[in-house]
Length: 187
Image 1 (cartoon, rainbow, N blue to C red):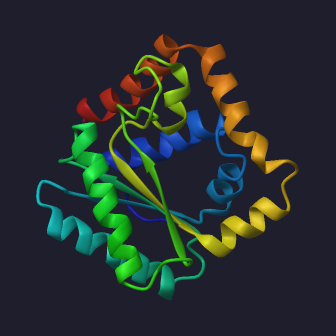
Image 2 (tube, rainbow, N blue to C red):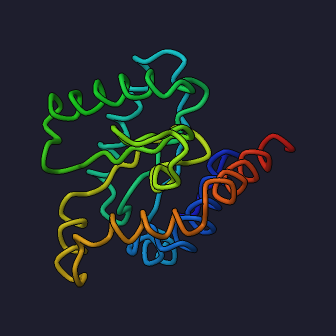
């Protein structure tokens, strides 16, 4: 499934390798990365309608391509403002339900300014969902359920991640993301 990646998708792959896997934020990411079952795609969201159509097209691609386990949709340009991103995410989730994908695919959300409700913006725990660019992560529900069944104490993953992010600190984590963004800007 090796495809030529845009610079932002290549940097996103590096984020998965050097951040998500390196910090074990997702204990299942390494397997998918090594198996080459992650699709990376870049979609402009300056206009929502074509971006949402592209998201549905990625669901169809997953329908037709069982060897792809998950897709990371890098959304740029557009949605740089976190509140705009959250509005888009809500529409995207409703669209997946409308298209009959509820229970088949799940959306996980990542944004450079991600902030959990009730958390301070500077809390390093937010970095569990911070990424170089706004993105949507399309996951197969069946694959996720299978992975969780075979993983000891999956309920502890979020707390373990929060603790790890706080140990690393906001400054270190922000530098890591900034370096990934800068690698694309240099090209």
